[in-house]
Image (cartoon, rainbow, N blue to C red; front, top):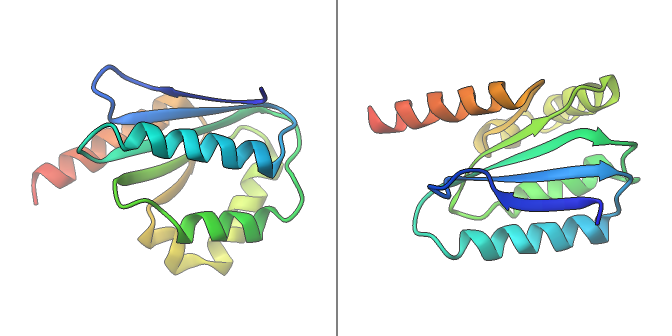
Length: 132
């Protein structure tokens, strides 16, 4: 399967979704449902890390589909982090963030270059939430 879904840590505070090669929206929807099923097993915020570094190409209609998925964000999902090291992922994120600026900020949707940066964002978010 070109998309794998697994807990990223023992505390079950993050789920890593890894995209391999080419994938379809149907496969993405299956991964999304698996993610939601996993989130339903805990009673706390869960961050999602979408690792696209091994993905080759993106399905058509990426901007519209991304918007639809962000609009349906589960209440227990914290940060939504995309890891991408290819320029087209960054260009698409920039276009999306420009068009849907309010949605990106409201839904806490970020793009980083590495897993370490994703962990740093999660740590910063967790620290900020504890200080509120």
